[in-house]
Length: 107
Image (cartoon, rainbow, N blue to C red):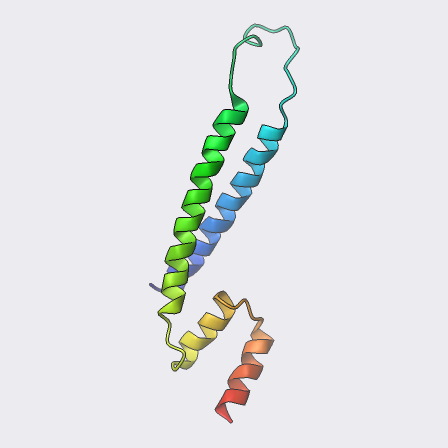
């Protein structure tokens, strides 16, 4: 798996988390519609639908995280570039910390 694919997975995970937060907000907003307009009487299970979608999104996030972590764990710690990618994406180190670690390990 390439760095571009790993970054794409990270973006998809972020997008799904945002969608999940939006759905949670919609599910929490369960105030009845008292407008008196036609169709206001229709029964809809907003909370049930949102819970189902949230569960599906959580499963997809878990699957993507497993795929990403598997790819990151396959990176070699002996290859400089792969080790930098691992520290950045897996350990969430900043570039300054990565540079310091790289310099200290090369001495």
